[in-house]
Amino acid sequence: MERNAVQEGPMSTNSQSTDSRIASRRTMTRRAAGRACLGVVMAGLACLVAPPIAAAQPQDYPNRPITLVVPFPPGGSTSIVGRLVADKMGEVLGQQIVVDNRGGAGGTVAARAFTRAAPDGYTLLFGYSGTIAIGPSLYPAAGFDPRKDFAPIGMIGTAPAVLVVHPSFDIASAGALVARAKEKPGQIAYGSAGVGTVTHIAGELFVAMSGAKLTHVPYRGSGPVLNDLIGGHIKMSFTPIPAVHAMVQSGSLKALAVTSAQRSSLMPSVPTVSETGLPGYEVVLRYGLLAPAGTPRAIVDALNKALRTALASDDLKKRLAHEGAEVLPSSPEEYAADIDREETKWSKVIRDAGIKAE
Image (cartoon, rainbow, N blue to C red):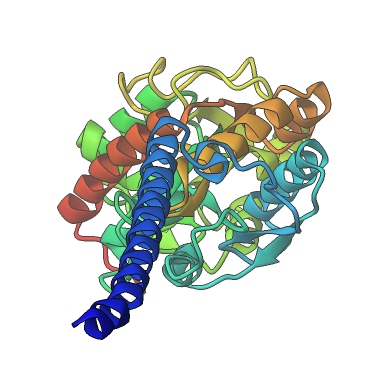
């Protein structure tokens, strides 16, 4: 019995020591797990209190060159304005902005492809009213929605056209033109740079608002229109101011009225169409800057700030004025509203006139 008691004594002591060690390890494990959970909770709270810096402000944007897609071939007024803005914005941002000219179907080919660009601020689109506001209604397969597929950055400016006639045409004002066209319906022809161009739509709006009937003669570009106009083969045309400014000054053509709501600084002595016979008439080319839909707002705001800074430059203002453009900066929301108004306006003109793309 005593031997058994002696044998059992050491076994009982060892068991107690083992149990203590296990309990100690369990306590330490629970404490470590608690500390880990507390760390996770605190990290989660920190994320809620202080959002990631990248989401609040694009600290490293831009850190490489940006591409600006201009939806027309190089050389035209639209392309020139796009390059001027790209160069100045590049200076402001400290990164080169490379212009990529892509023509086709009034700019809708480039706009459609642009909707597939990454929304990271490194591919932008030069917005033009002929493409953004007129294109979707004129081209059934345009392939983009101007209200949903773009993130407006801001407006750049506006550029009016001018109603010019051959000097032999004995008409002195827009009002007199309306009266003559009503006397001789369909006998007065106006040339345009092509079906669906702003120079065509300007004529259609003139017809719709005045009730006068004019005959539309489409050409392939502004050059052929002006050649026939100077030669007297057609009597009139709605044409961008820079294209005919020198011709008006030399007397080769006669300017009746500008198409904007206010007079142009390039032709301050020429009244508006609205002033001289057709109240409320307004047709202007509208330029802006767009990013793909889904671009972070912080990047949109950074680009808007850079655009505004560029447009405040006296040098850029003068160079844009030479191209007939009046600087008109805006917020992203103001540009979005402008796109909505313009698309609504021109889609109605296109629909009512039954205009079809060539």
